Image (cartoon, rainbow, N blue to C red):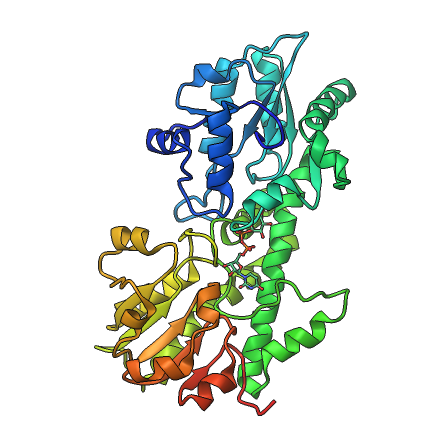
Length: 428
Ligand code: UGA
């Protein structure tokens, strides 16, 4: 928002994060973000604080707090959103002449914006509500924010309020709109549903190709060729058709679950029964990776040394939330294996959080005397590893390619036994 030309105050309850941000340091790994932080903190256009009084003058309050899965339940924890709204209500000094806008970015159950709008109306404060979902991908957050592929505004049904809310958002996104970014204007429920529908579709696409990987495993087919071939059909498209150990992270898994929970509350759970299958296929990928490793090692993992390359839920982030790689590594260890895990971004965090996992400094150290090597997160640096040079390091040349990103022939030719995910052995 500062880069788009606005004066921005970032409010959070986490004093440590606020201190880092105020010093121009990003509290997580995101390419391009430290540069932008530094630039705008130095220019005074971007400030961070734990003091809610600092947000009084804001014209737009973007709410971007988390909505994590409730422990032991499918639904989302809405307490952070509710607290944020309460903070805005307690602090905004908007007036009837100059109303302010709450613009929700958090991924929420459908019905939330209406509930917040009713709270705002009942409070007598001059706060409008819009829902303005966020579609950025971790690892591409800066680009996706500055050049989104679409903007979505969920506006109030009251026409006058809707016009005011739209005018504030249009002003805020003026430079983005000037680039020709498509804008979809809708009511609250539609805007809320757009977000979960998009993530559900992406999750479904991944689980579809992973289901095909199961079929390929049963028939000696190659899911990478299959994905390539169906992807040439523009109606299908080749993106998000990468079979492997499945999806993770702080969004897709919990969003499909919260969506199912909300559909249940609305009495339309049957409409989303398929997402249960999407979730189940996805979780089966992790079981499959564990049992494949076990059988590749002759049935037992006890005392076996396993090197894991990549532990974040996807490359270009240090995010470990619901990471399939970390789940698989943990399960291998529970079954008696000795793990050496390496990751370009999450090594330090992993050492702190999971001291039972060895985290060496280099790939060479990780592979030393390994009985099997598992590539679980396709960081760029792991795609070009040289199987010939690595062969002498390991005790057993077994490579399990959890993301189907290596060349099976190159690794086999160098003396490795290669296992992909739904990648039957073929000369083709
Ligand atoms: C996802 C959506 O892609 C964003 O559009 C959305 O804004 C964001 O959630 C959110 O709700 O905030 P993100 O969680 O950053 O973004 O991650 P993705 O790039 O969607 O990847 C999710 C998982 O799917 C990763 O574990 C990735 O490895 C896996 N994946 C992705 C596959 O297994 N196969 C694929 O073909 C693609």
